Image 1: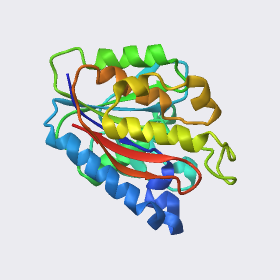
Image 2 (image 1 turned 90 degrees about the vertical axis):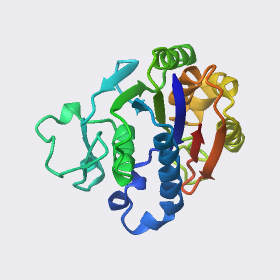
Image 3 (image 1 turned 120 degrees about the vertical axis):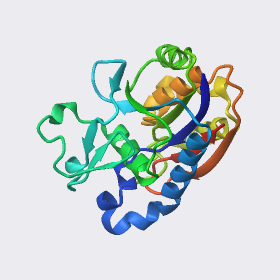
Image 4 (image 1 turned 45 degrees about the vertical axis):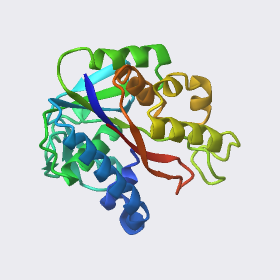
Length: 244
């Protein structure tokens, strides 16, 4: 059963070495992510599942605890491991094809910052885009056994909030992000489940699939939501929430 959930954005810029001189601009987001992870740890889960958008043909590709990731593609030799600890920069270089997708690498970095030790970790790369029905069904399967499961959901909101945003300015973006923020703040499972797939794709909202996976996992869990952070510093919506 799902006992808690956290939603965090997944831009590589959350990693200070990637952001370099602009690192301080996301300090508030990093602090909010740490607070959300604290909520997960406090729920004393038997297992933490980390879900994030990923490329590839599989609807939901599992990654084992300890899987390696890096930010070499962003010009920094920073390695991460999906086990709550920091990896050495040279770890995992012999098998780059098996590295964590960026969203899960960011999650691994966040978990290392809080020295996660509350439970074993399992990664799940969720194909983006993935239809809503499959997302919800996959989420339901996470919460069907007797384990106390915590879910860390990685994903950004729209990328069309300003003229300089990656997706340019789209007048629908602010309203879309506001509705997602409201749903996360109130743990509105039904609202997440019915997010418009086409609109989310138009707005380049990479978190949509994983939010809908959360909706499936949280059905009947009676969790309470809190929105910890909401901003769009680079024209991309970043949201942090905790459900408990």
